[in-house]
Length: 480
Figure 1 (cartoon, rainbow, N blue to C red):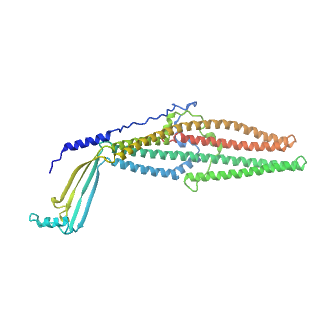
Figure 2: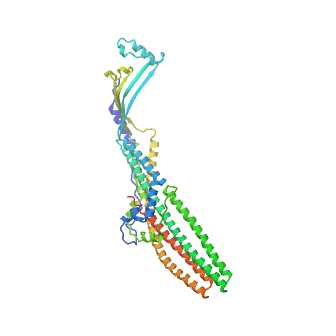
Figure 3: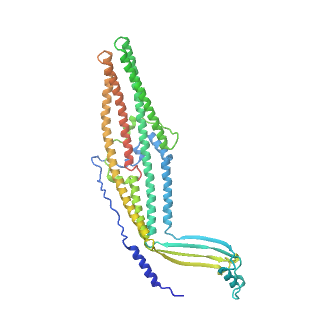
């Protein structure tokens, strides 16, 4: 047999390496988004209180709803299962660096044809005088084997390590996605809760105003009997009562829809929806201006997820580049093999082993590998752009929400003053109407305007509370 020339292996390997190294430069993308150190025009305030949901939302009734939602909401539970999937992928990728060891055991029985190479060879071997009786090949042929085998790809070029890195980052990305879903769930259920508080308040306002309006109807009827008012005035007052009752039915419908939506967010058909008073919650809520460092955006789960995805693409790119290089695999097996089961373990002659190494490199499929490499590079750029967009959107979202909270507060202050003025105008119009110095239209206008203003005040308070809830999510949702 011709002796194997080791120089040929060296030359062949070198050729593969030269082919793999050509034009495979990897450069990490650099973000073009530069944020300021802080959000402008905001006084200093401690940030830690913004990062824990039960401190951010002090209302005990809302806290109870949030706890139920975190435990039962299907979206939240689904993300937890996705974390389990990603964890399994990470464990699998880590195991790729270790030798693959397996056990084997088998038994077979085969009858060779007499006019085949195996059949003739076995028959001829059994006729040999040098073959003892216990080594003669049986017909039909039996084969028993027990042992273990292994294979181990040597990670010379870092392909397996890159795949492990990508799997780890994607696992961490799934964790951040779960945190984002939780923050979104908390802010959504808080927003619906605040909407329900506002509707409770509006229904209460309507009930109080309907009572006053009914008193007005009685008053104008008495004035009509005394000849100081006519039927038109009675009709106008009664129409005002009917309009208020219709508006109250609309508010009750909206309230029921909000309650059902809270049930859906909580993941349960029925739930205790005991609520606090809007004014009390509004006074206790975090409504002051905030000085927030731009770096707090690092707490946002969606930005952290985008960052992990970007890091995962680096692993993908490294693995794609390593695919150009030859892979080196060690393999082997050890065990026992015999055609007589009684001699499988008792005879040393039945022991077998094999050791070897293999070298494989792409030759004809290099174009496909190059396209996979280019796809990985494009994927990295896409991940970078997605990360930049998340950072920019997050920064601007916080600015917008803080501006909403500030302007809503200014509106609330003005609207509260307007409510006080209009309540006084109702008393004045009723007094003037009773002595004939004001018309019934002035009384109706004062009552209508007062009712509308009180409802607008409740809606403004609810809107400010909802913006505050969305700010919780925009600041990272409290998940570090």
